[in-house]
Length: 332
Ligand code: DGJ
Image 1 (tube, rainbow, N blue to C red):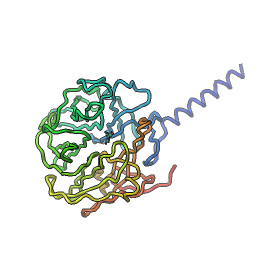
Image 2: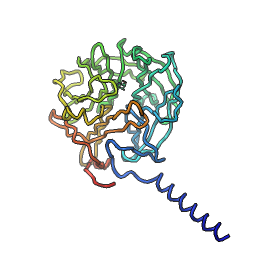
Image 3: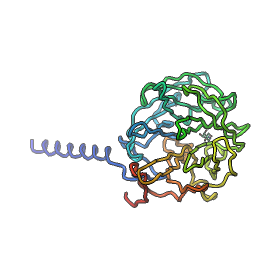
Image 4: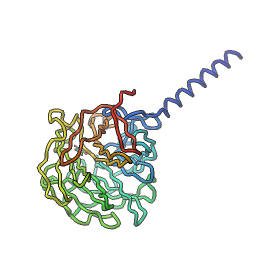
């Protein structure tokens, strides 16, 4: 009886330890490392995007978990009050081929916009055939942020090829889709009132760039993109303009070119406006094409201002989303 009781207590302790382990707080953003969510699993939000609703940030991205059905494609949604600790909410898309893209169809780089007028969440996706020749965007909608999104349609924005997509919401609330058209370049296009279609070309930057991202910071627009090298990293570049419609400056390196952007590829820039400071975070993917579930994230605060932008050498850091301030940390 005594033995049974002690085994029971030991088991209980192991159970409690596991619970503590799973719900442990993540103390810092650690570029290139496994990023555990509230369940202790590596965040699956590759090629992702972030929107803030109320006090929470929501991170959407490609869910490439190892045990996903290989015939389906998944998008996951996570939420966080501090951009550091992420709670898994839902696999908001889990779909077979929705429109005959064929075997090995592509569903990448989900980006969610909130349409205030219709109180609707509108997701844009890069949808494609396995050989990337269909080159379309897909649209899916939901009336709650982390519900199951309903696939609506796919099309070529403004009749053009579209591969990597990015999202940008300007300070005046206007929403834009960034899309890469191999034949022409980097498009910035405004969405319709209901966000369900791509309405108007604002600018075509004639540069072969994908992984497009934009931020509006202290009166200047900054655009970032990567070269077209598949899953391999390359030196990402930036340009600036006083208006979204251009003219845009020449593109310059964001990091020492020999580092290939520290092995990463841009997906978004997140502007955190705090009470004391504004921080712009470079959000990028370190792809592992042979083990995509283990692809890592490189998030770093950018050195930005007066037309210059620079990605510091990645190392662990912390952000206070209330003040907007960040600092490096040695905390484990
Ligand atoms: C680079 C893109 O940025 C990725 O999203 C993905 O489409 C790969 N190319 C595929 O090679």
